[in-house]
Image (cartoon, rainbow, N blue to C red; front, side, top):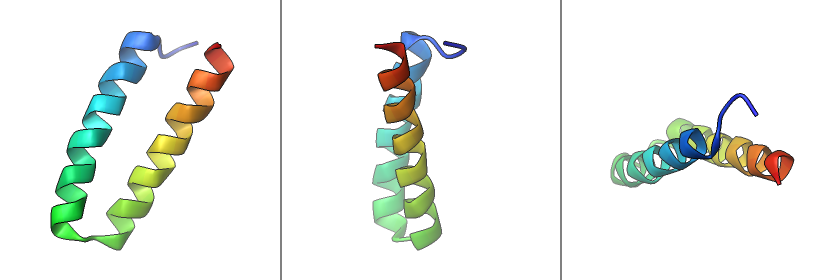
Amino acid sequence: MSIGWIGIFFIYKAGIKTKEVFLMNKDIKNEKFYIFIKLVIKAKSLNII
């Protein structure tokens, strides 16, 4: 609960932005990092529900 819904929302929005950048760059490391962040967000949201 350290990150509230607003925090998750902003991280998610940032994630969408970074994914667009990663897709343009086609950097595999960054793509893996994005997937990791997405999994963390999913885990957080499941814990909050």
